[in-house]
Image 1 (tube, rainbow, N blue to C red):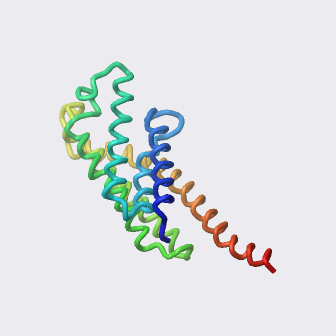
Image 2 (tube, one colour):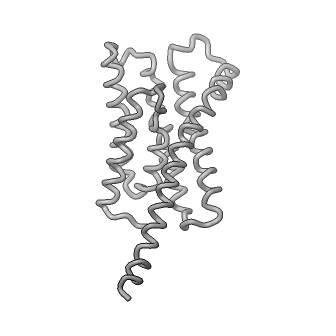
Image 3 (cartoon, rainbow, N blue to C red):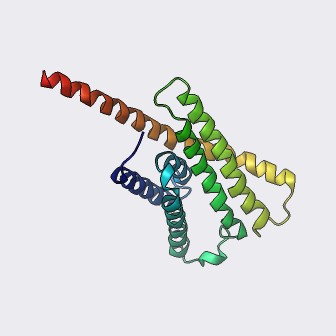
Length: 196
């Protein structure tokens, strides 16, 4: 599956729009799609990591800045922007890498594709959550006396909600991917029938 520059740009813009729209209200009715966006981008934009990953990271930080500033708060003194905020780089790259590895092993709609997708989502979210939640837990001043037991409980409390929201978005993207793939496969056959 080779994508043209135009296709990659369109995918990037669509993913950036979804991330910006859902990240604006992190705990709103529509869950934040950022984690899924990085994983999906890793799959579709695998060869464009040098520009696409930093661009998505800048967008994520810009949206955070807008949201925090709009609330009348200082970005740099907000409790979410602790030294642990820097751990979003390896966290989001974990998702990108999961999507990229899935793409490397993707051979089309084969029997093992669903298993690889589930494995990539679960492993990537687990590693992303390890960095994002761990960076916040251990390095922010929001946790007065961090302990390993407290960290493990916090990790477990938030893992499934993040896995669920990421999984929903990735499942939607997989359905769109399959539908488009089937339509593109059917188009030449329909054209051949029409030409006869």
